[in-house]
Image 1 (spheres, rainbow, N blue to C red):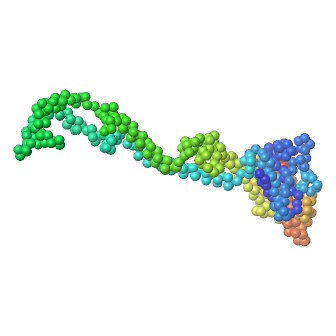
Image 2 (image 1 turned 30 degrees about the vertical axis):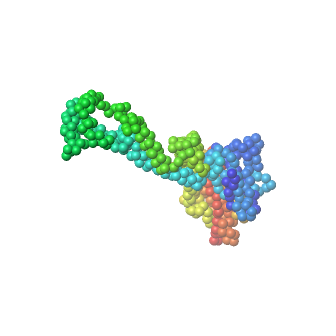
Image 3 (image 1 turned 45 degrees about the vertical axis):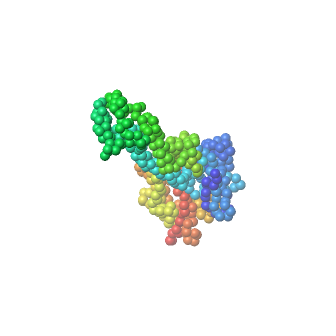
Length: 456
């Protein structure tokens, strides 16, 4: 962490900054904390943060202190003497540092979190789309479409019609059929019918044997004793239907697991490396980070919960920044530069006062505030001599939410200023400063002033 404070100025200058918090306390580097200016006899030299020039480029850099997250004011000074002093010149406008506790807040950090969220949203979409296919593949499990060892659905085999045919085989019917067979096997064309063992069929199918067969058929179970319970129906390998169904469930489950893993990718299944672990890591900053993610992802900082907190912090900073802007009224130009004619009056009574406006002013309160407009010769200011050549009061007021700052200049005051030509066009530098009733000093504007020589 370094070089968060940046400034551009003439090369070879001795620059330093003071850092203030929202309460107006100044940062004390030795103590590592903010305090009221002058506590313990401390002076400007105790609070300075030195800016170092990069070569002879006129670019100056300094390190912002390690403090809590918030918005801080950074005021830059040009050191005149051997050590920093309260009389040193303030350079430029007061800057703001938006700090997250470890680094300056910038747009690139938010973009990184946004990219992370989009990446993991794609993963969730893929997993959701895969679930629809998985559901369709497992619909047949659970008894909806049970099948036998030949692959035929059980419902198409054990029909009511087939069970009715079995019931129709009543005792005595077999005897009638056997009598017909007896006639048929007496011989074809006078030749005795024989079995595979070459025995004459008439000597095998005797009355005694047929009687035994009839008795066996007559003693078969009644239709009421035939049940389709899973425990009684068996396949060709003697497995009960329940066993076969359980095996089908297992095979279907394994097949669908393979399909699922093929679609969403394999997990190492250690620690948080599961679908549930990934979802927790994406949503909760307190969850463990799945190592399968790889890269620098961390649930503590990159989960949706952590990002939501950061966005809330950014929103707070934006609200603190507000939408305030400084408007100016002639003879103050839009860029803040002042142009006046030597020897002229610039009075509010004539609607010619120098005027600045700050819209959407919220804090600090300007009730009871006073102000000063100071001018110093530009050439003196450039060499570090900030002795004022003119100082006049500023009228501070509020018009709704707009802060208004007005300055009257008399003819005598403008006549005493050095005109141009013969000097440079912008021959003065000015500073408009307000002091609140609580003692806070606020620089509203700082810029160049052109005093044009009058015609005698």
